[in-house]
Image 1 (cartoon, helix red, strand yellow):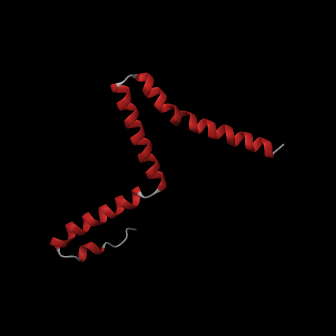
Image 2 (cartoon, rainbow, N blue to C red):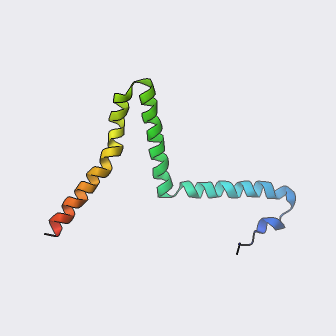
Image 3 (tube, rainbow, N blue to C red):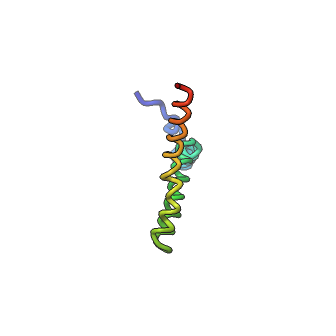
Length: 88
Protein backbone atom coordinates (compact mmCIF):
# COMPACT_ATOMS: atom_id res chain seq x y z
CA UNK A 1 0.00 0.00 0.00
CA UNK A 2 1.37 3.38 -0.98
CA UNK A 3 1.27 6.42 1.23
CA UNK A 4 -1.01 9.29 0.35
CA UNK A 5 0.70 12.09 -1.55
CA UNK A 6 -0.53 15.54 -0.60
CA UNK A 7 1.15 17.09 -3.66
CA UNK A 8 -1.84 16.01 -5.75
CA UNK A 9 -3.96 18.58 -3.90
CA UNK A 10 -1.69 21.49 -4.84
CA UNK A 11 -2.35 23.58 -7.93
CA UNK A 12 -0.34 22.42 -10.95
CA UNK A 13 1.97 25.45 -10.94
CA UNK A 14 3.06 24.70 -7.34
CA UNK A 15 3.69 20.97 -7.78
CA UNK A 16 6.97 21.30 -9.65
CA UNK A 17 8.80 23.50 -7.12
CA UNK A 18 7.41 21.45 -4.23
CA UNK A 19 8.62 18.20 -5.83
CA UNK A 20 12.04 19.75 -6.42
CA UNK A 21 12.19 20.90 -2.80
CA UNK A 22 11.24 17.40 -1.65
CA UNK A 23 13.95 15.82 -3.86
CA UNK A 24 16.60 18.17 -2.48
CA UNK A 25 15.48 17.44 1.07
CA UNK A 26 15.70 13.66 0.46
CA UNK A 27 19.15 13.97 -1.11
CA UNK A 28 20.38 16.12 1.77
CA UNK A 29 19.11 13.64 4.36
CA UNK A 30 20.68 10.77 2.41
CA UNK A 31 24.05 12.53 2.36
CA UNK A 32 23.88 13.22 6.10
CA UNK A 33 23.86 9.51 6.90
CA UNK A 34 27.28 8.30 8.11
CA UNK A 35 27.43 5.48 5.57
CA UNK A 36 26.89 7.86 2.67
CA UNK A 37 29.40 10.35 4.02
CA UNK A 38 32.08 7.69 4.39
CA UNK A 39 31.36 6.33 0.91
CA UNK A 40 31.61 9.82 -0.56
CA UNK A 41 34.93 10.49 1.21
CA UNK A 42 36.38 7.16 0.00
CA UNK A 43 35.23 7.99 -3.53
CA UNK A 44 36.92 11.40 -3.39
CA UNK A 45 40.08 9.75 -2.06
CA UNK A 46 40.06 7.23 -4.92
CA UNK A 47 39.63 10.03 -7.45
CA UNK A 48 42.71 11.72 -5.98
CA UNK A 49 44.63 8.43 -6.14
CA UNK A 50 43.69 7.82 -9.78
CA UNK A 51 44.63 11.40 -10.63
CA UNK A 52 48.03 10.82 -9.02
CA UNK A 53 48.38 7.58 -10.97
CA UNK A 54 47.70 9.31 -14.27
CA UNK A 55 49.92 12.32 -13.61
CA UNK A 56 52.90 10.95 -11.71
CA UNK A 57 52.96 7.20 -12.04
CA UNK A 58 51.70 4.13 -10.35
CA UNK A 59 54.22 4.06 -7.47
CA UNK A 60 52.89 7.23 -5.87
CA UNK A 61 49.31 6.05 -6.38
CA UNK A 62 50.17 2.73 -4.75
CA UNK A 63 51.60 4.56 -1.75
CA UNK A 64 48.44 6.65 -1.55
CA UNK A 65 46.20 3.56 -1.57
CA UNK A 66 48.08 1.82 1.22
CA UNK A 67 46.01 3.44 4.00
CA UNK A 68 42.83 2.16 2.34
CA UNK A 69 44.25 -1.35 2.14
CA UNK A 70 46.12 -1.54 5.43
CA UNK A 71 43.67 0.18 7.79
CA UNK A 72 41.04 -2.61 7.73
CA UNK A 73 43.74 -5.27 8.05
CA UNK A 74 45.36 -3.47 10.97
CA UNK A 75 42.04 -2.99 12.74
CA UNK A 76 41.22 -6.70 12.29
CA UNK A 77 44.61 -7.61 13.74
CA UNK A 78 44.06 -5.33 16.76
CA UNK A 79 40.59 -6.77 17.30
CA UNK A 80 41.90 -10.32 17.13
CA UNK A 81 44.77 -9.56 19.54
CA UNK A 82 42.45 -7.93 22.07
CA UNK A 83 39.90 -10.72 21.77
CA UNK A 84 42.52 -13.42 22.23
CA UNK A 85 44.07 -11.57 25.19
CA UNK A 86 40.77 -11.31 27.07
CA UNK A 87 39.65 -14.87 26.29
CA UNK A 88 42.69 -16.71 27.54
